[in-house]
Length: 540
Ligand code: G1P
Ligand code: ZN
Image (cartoon, rainbow, N blue to C red; front, side, top):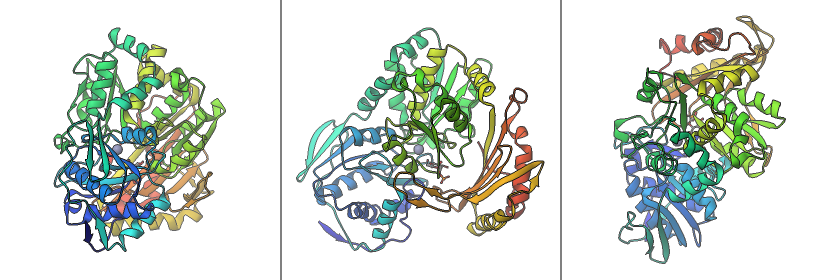
């Protein structure tokens, strides 16, 4: 059935797909226009195969049905869908690769809250399993501005709760167990018997699935296959509104877990993951691990896991992520890469074999096993390392800082700002950048200041305007950029970093260690002065 439609403004994918208020997605033709534009911008769906699934948030089930019917009407050959319409983002990436499909549509607004009054999102991943690169998201957006019709099959809903083969018209729909293939992949990477022995030796863990998609994956892998005691995974049932929680694994939103890990009878290891399962936070007993540090520790110890026993090819991090991983790469004698924010920029580096591990300060870590960041994978790599080293998380961190020095790091978010104020702050700092090199601020000398532009080393594509950065000769850095995932007003992210080589000063409180950098940032960008806010809304 061909349905006439009109272009809808604002269907421009951001850092990670198209994210809007759920009600916007529920408005007439909104989802349909975007999905048709994805098909149109990728040469049509005729004869193609796709993976479809999402994090189960409100509207997920309906959206899955719409996509299945649209894929059928556009001539697709087969769609693989997770039972109930569920797939974590890394599991979807794996399935795209495993079945060599032409791509996949993932329904999620990641760590943004879900529900009729919260957020929804959709993302197209290409045949390598990774998020569509910028050139493609731009083509999709361009198509949304000229679309005049979409195709949808006038058929009954598919029974997505029943595993097995079904058909819509001539298109095959394969409903599969969302967990099985992913769990099997993890078994090929990690030493499950060794981790099992860790648990049977009394090692205690708490995994907070935040009422989101990783619950079933974590229960199957941690409790069923690795023998962690039942109840190790909490908030394990995915709910359409995440139980009213904010499914973002950071110290602010995973506060219950943080309190337990900092408390008197804390487990040995704690972890949480986000709405769609690609983010992770890891915590030791009494010690929080900053994501940038986690990436560095994983890079330094990855060879302890069988999947990385041959060593790493290289490491990549997003520009705002601390440079801790670069120090590890230098010692290991492997390449290190600095990319713009967003997982899509790692795709070419992974595909071309330049890097094995990548990470972002925003609680994202992953490797070449899929083309998305992967929350549970990071937790399993930590467990594998803990099982091999037989040390506590705190001992591993102290040892790491003694060897490599410590990159104190924090991100300060100013959320839901009026766009004009956020732009004024960005423009103000941008205008000052050329004058900064050579200046001495708080005893630190500016060695470089620019608006980060990235030339992809594989295909040469350029991405400009990726964040303002001020770099100091002692390794300190200030980075300022606007979020590309928010759905309300503008969110300003201020990233702060200070390097201490040691052996003294490795155990300071993070915000205190960063105080001179924080003061310098305010002197340069005047965020508090311009917004009138007393401080950031979220500190990670
Ligand atoms: C945020 C994070 C970024 C991550 C993205 C998707 O994007 O900062 O690192 O890749 O979410 O999870 P932002 O809102 O900063 O554009
Ligand atoms: Zn996510």
